[in-house]
Length: 122
Image (cartoon, rainbow, N blue to C red; front, side, top):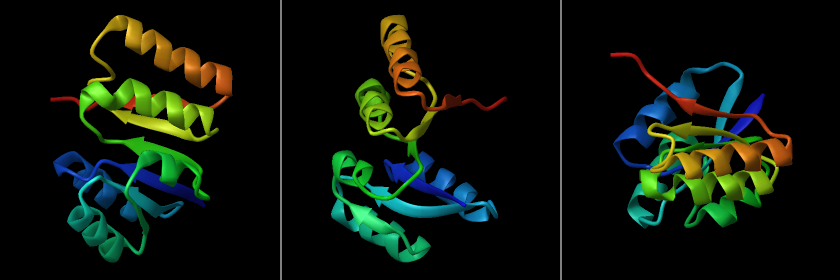
């Protein structure tokens, strides 16, 4: 069972939450968002623990983080998740600059965690 932490509970976060809930080998164990009403709603809906910050969630017993935050926050979030030894799925676009993308890849490689971006066709 993979224990998933979902960071960012806007439209795309909601889509990803539904997907994680439908995967037999996954458990949406934690959610985080700065907006209390969003995180409470998602926690109640999916039986997850709610966190106000990514840092708090990264300290919990999760295996991977799904980053659905605004793009300008992706690099910092991926680097923090990798440093916490969590595998990472990051929503597209990966980052704002090629240098940010390179730094994110380097952080995952250094930490020895899996890292991928969520791409969709069409």
